[in-house]
Image (tube, rainbow, N blue to C red):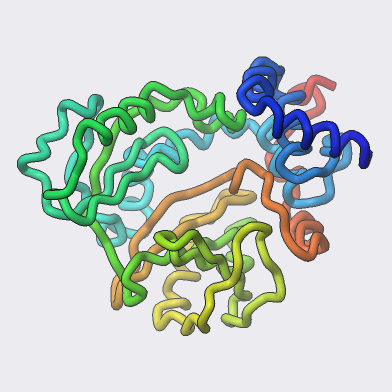
Length: 306
């Protein structure tokens, strides 16, 4: 296994574009195996997955995640949020468009956030419209909407989404940026809180239990915040909202924002980081894996192909 890891690492360093093309041509199961090995440096066990990261890979292949498409589309999900917890938790919407050139930038506010609706990571934060490079932004946004996000990581909930662009109002909290509060929820119960911050300087992540005790766990590649993060005054409210939004789902991560006295919805995620998070210590991957009951996804042997 050690030799296989060295070979994969050497190939990745020498020809990343070639390797990417080869991976994209693979069937889903083989793609997931190759991607998992490249990202985690571990062999993927699909017949008897135990770790959280392995179970997310299993869900991508056998979890019938296509049914969750309405909940991951960044525009369509707003209806679910409005019906479940109320419109006051939605980040105010500026507009939705099919093409970049349909956006009336002369009427846009000085600050806004532009997103594509059909995947993850398609975000552009405008803090000063007067400094906006429209040709560059057009190139970026056009690239977003030309892509099928499913092809990137084989997450089937994104496969049939219609690419669109939305703009939301710019939000900021006391940190001078906007922290993400992410709540992995199992059977409608939030298990912990992931706090993402310092995006401008890289990214930090702190993991807390529900009582706001810092967990001795790191996600590889993301250090803890330099200073202590105070327990949010609205933490209990956020936990209640996460429970309401995750009710009825065997597993989903609920992402929220908190600005002063307001809580806003971020997104719902069914395959966080496409199942390639590496936790330190690795025992935490197994701890989360014990929480994720794959039998609750109603998958039969027939649907798995035997």
